Image 1 (tube, rainbow, N blue to C red):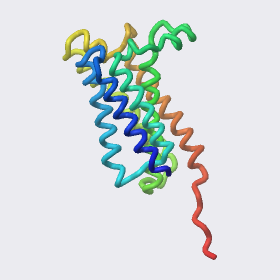
Image 2: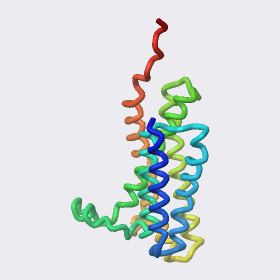
Image 3: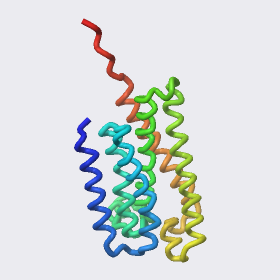
Length: 202
C-alpha cells in the first residue's frame, strides 16, 4: 500500500473543509452535515496506526467524505448539479442520492477488515455482515435527519432533510445506500476472490 495516499486524502479533506467552511449557505446546516463526517475522518485517522486499510478502501471511503462536505456548504438541494439534472431530465437535484450511494462504499472496508483480521470464517457472513451494517447506518441516519428536522429551525430542518417534496425520500436514500454497498461488495469480490497464497518453502 502506498502510505502517502491516506495522508494526501486527509490533507485534501482538511483543505476542502476549511475552504467550504467559509460562508456556507446556512451555518447550522453546515454544522449538522459536517459533524458526522468529521467523526468519520477522526476515527479513520486515529485508527490508522492500529489498522491501515488498502488504498482502494481509502479511496472509496473518501468519496463520501468529499461529496458530503460539498453538500454541507451549499445544502444538498442547492449543490450546483444542474448539468446532470438537465442531461437526464430529472425533476430534482439528485446530488444527495449520489452521496448516499457512496455511503455504501464503506462496505468494502468493513469486508476487508473482516477478511484481513480473520474475524469470520463464512464467506456468506463476509458479504452479508457489511451489507447489514450499511443498511443499519442508512436507517439510523434517516432517523437522525427526522429528529433534526422536527427539532431545528424549520428552514434548516428542511435543508438537512433534503426531501425536496418527495414523500419517499427516506426510503430512496436507504435504497441508494444499500445499492452502493452491493456495488462495493462486488468490487471487493473482484479484488479479493483470489487472495495471494504464501510462497512455498524452498
